[in-house]
Image (cartoon, rainbow, N blue to C red; front, side, top):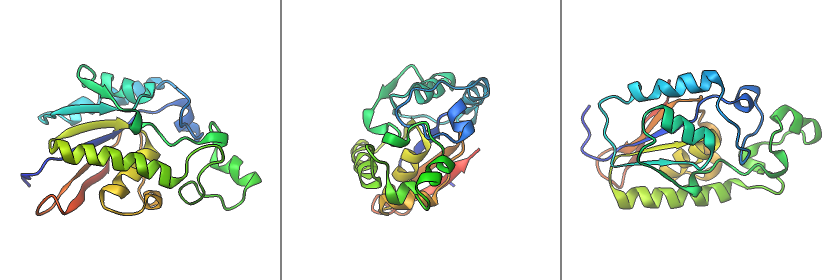
Length: 193
């Protein structure tokens, strides 16, 4: 279906050792695995025929390398607001390990000690959305799972905590857009693999 409104493509970075093991990877700069690099190389062909007015990436090497390996690194602009959730004291720890000392903990509801709450991540997502709407152009974004989930929720006008309802696999591609006009933001596709 043809769409006259700009679409925003979101790409989650490729696999890392920590994403593979379920360790919360916020600000630690973990490289892609060999499988992550191979999957990143397959992103470009999946976007064949698409053109973008801008390419934006999180500052993390996992997002930047996914961007580069997919063939979009040359013109990429690094945006600090696209960084993954700051997990603070929970950086590098799995949810199972957190539950051992804090039963019932949920990232999107409870946030992280010495890190961010969902509202903090939502404020960064809102800044990105404001830039996207000002640009009013097709843009390709490379970032991380929890940030992109909050971005998807905020795009729809939902609270940042509703990002918990969206799942993203590594090197998945999602598309944000509009239905009848720019006052009707929608998710056109989510977690495409």
